Image (tube, rainbow, N blue to C red; front, side):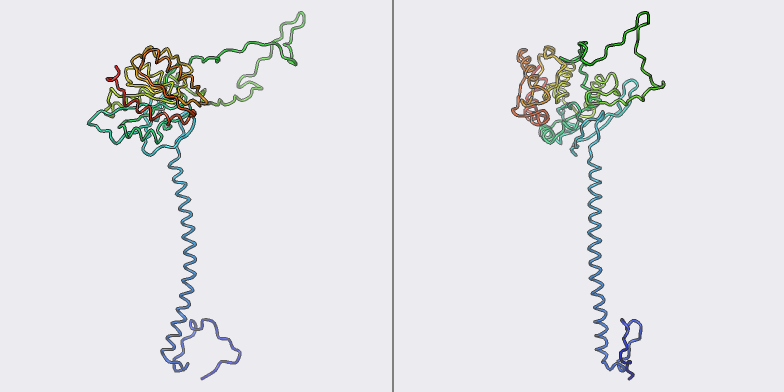
Length: 381
């Protein structure tokens, strides 16, 4: 047998490049050769598995992170509440609430308006169901009136709950835009303040000095007109008859719901919060033949007079207000409740201690639904 020269180095993995020596040349038995080859292959396979497992784990982790991040983005996009018409706040939509729209037309106006609907599982075509029209407050979308408590009580009572937009978030539901107390007065001219320059006077024999006219659009020196910015209280882009459109939207939605469902005409109720509370009082008087009862919550009735209740002496009405209301004085509801008492109306007044303007929406609901359950047209008129 030939031997390798002293110091010669055998190439790595020689079994890959050189034919395996016969068992006679190596002096090994066939079993030993097979065992050595098996051990060599097993070692390489184990090292391959270790590397593969490490890479597989890293790949799985990366994929999970990417999938999770994508799922979060997709969910956020799906659940992002739509921006209400006319700006204002955004609120999440309960999946049990249906957000619908219809084509609103009035003169040159033709656009889709949203409204919210919740239908109790107890509602059926075979029997008439009670209906509640609920009006949102200034700057809020209709779904603010469809919180968990409202859904729970509507479900238990077998109600259909509908929330019109009122054209946009500042429609005021048809309430006439009359000046409020302390508003609309023009400031009187006061004395000349120290440091103010007096108006220039003409010299004797010269014509009166008049200020130079301001440059109009397109004239030399004219500055570009500033873009009008609206607010919750008004927007120059609003239609001039916004309040009329707001009332029309409410009545359109009411008519559509009455056609779609089997509604108990003796049990149609109207409620609302803040601006919607004022809208409840206004529409409650104007369309009194429709409603079985009214429920204004913290009504922002700054432009309404409690004497209007004289037109609906047989109407059932519940007033609810928090005594810690920081936006609408509780005294407004107290005055309306006092007038209802004076007229001998069927009414309740629920003043809740420590509750502010926003939380009163849900805190008011239990007493309102209990009041509605006791009153219908047949029971009070």
